[in-house]
Image 1 (cartoon, rainbow, N blue to C red):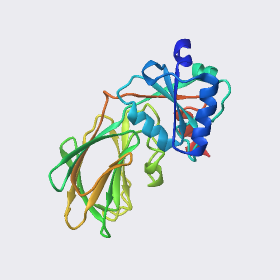
Image 2: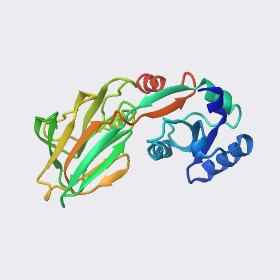
Image 3: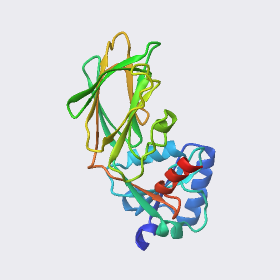
Length: 257
């Protein structure tokens, strides 16, 4: 970051006692610039709050530096009040494009949302979901019977995707991961690696009997009948990390520790 940008910081915090205490301490030491005048944002909380901050500023060309005041903190740096300007000056930047979701529900209404981590489809009732999967207009799987499926970015590959036994994707790779959750037919189907430019469509089969919800980073749409997902290159999320602790290094640690 430039010297001027690192000095113009806007702090934002999650609604927790730990994050609020951290906010008070940092503002007391470094001041608080209005968002419109800031050179960067420092977000205080956990990964959920980091995603919330990135979504709230997705149309601004501004970098976000997270400090962990939560529980997970995969997207966050270690919290410290000291030497903030020096840390920002030395920070490494990762640029992430989100996914764009367009979901049509049973009433025919269209819902749109962006997802930094993943778009997931989940069964709503006791019966497994039945999904038809098309890639770039070609049906690739006529019927997937499962608890759900998701499409994730490299940044989101260590989140829900990894818990569902999906692959970890290197940051900066031009691919997406399509992962099934508890696939029943085809038995134990683990998913696919797709080009970043791929357009993925899910059609929900027997939707009235086997209802499905779609979720984009926590923003849910119930009773969907179709969901189309693609990467959104026009939106760039800039995330800052301390040297040696960037997303690339964290991905290696997840796989080798």
